[in-house]
Length: 190
Image 1 (cartoon, rainbow, N blue to C red):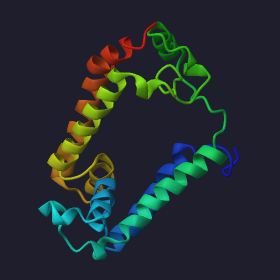
Image 2 (image 1 turned 180 degrees about the vertical axis):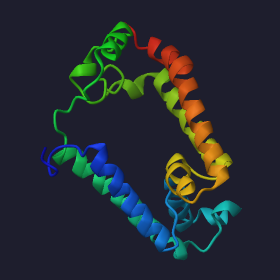
Image 3 (image 1 turned 120 degrees about the vertical axis):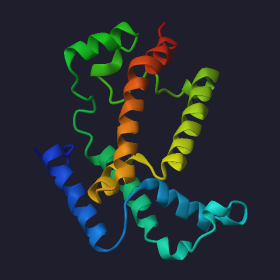
Image 4 (image 1 turned 45 degrees about the horizontal axis):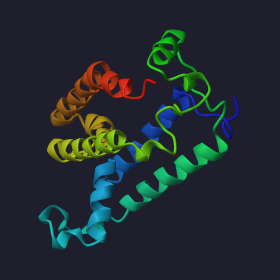
């Protein structure tokens, strides 16, 4: 395994996340993408319209490093650490995906049947993206943070609200996987 070109396994990536989180906690900071987006919105002037964004964003300017790091890390991983491109899947999962019309599960990282250039011309896809984006935004605000903030920082700080939020995230993910996703995927069956 080459750490410069291959995707990092859990036993390297997990401790790396723990080291970054420990450094943030020791510095009195918390981690979460929604707080980074809140800072970005405040910088862009959203505080003049909404009280939620009206805060001392200059004290949170370090959040932009997290956004920049996430973008840079994604670009590096995509262009230099792509490996085989396809995710190794259990053969049973591959047959289930093929039964729903997704034949590229073993050849592409993201199924081309769903993620292709023509997807945005499909009103159903646009509607699902708008509804999904609204639900993610609403859930993030309602839960007082995003999945990464609650699951990484909140649980590390032993916060009960974060534990409740993470249980809710997992329950919602299971419901979506077994009940909502099959109906959405049925739209793509030829």
